[in-house]
Picture 1 (cartoon, rainbow, N blue to C red):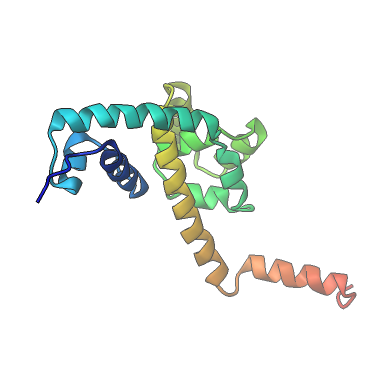
Picture 2 (picture 1 turned 90 degrees about the vertical axis):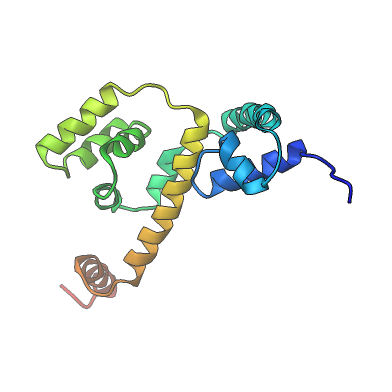
Length: 171
């Protein structure tokens, strides 16, 4: 049996798999997946992959505002379950008025804590933004699915009342 050796494509596929699963590819994590290869070879290809990913991230503009818009009024509720640093990162991508509105939904000490995190925030590398974006989209999908599967509540009553008014049944 001939050993074809470790290829750049092998490393790229492993790195992509790790990233898709929410992790950060390292030489050791890639070697665990591949089960073979020298750490120096993996490191060389991983550096190439990181450069390529950064270039792709710059071409695919990260627009968290579009992801957040899908929550249609439930953004504050969704964010209450997130870590303050993640909240700060998300809010830093929104319009000022939207951010202020969302922050008012938190108690004063939490809102101030989030603002402090926003104030001291350093630039975030594009590869981490992509990981956060993918994770946020998955969580958002689960959150909206849950919201859609819930019955009753004030949102439902509001929609029914609007529909009734449109039909002229409530004066």
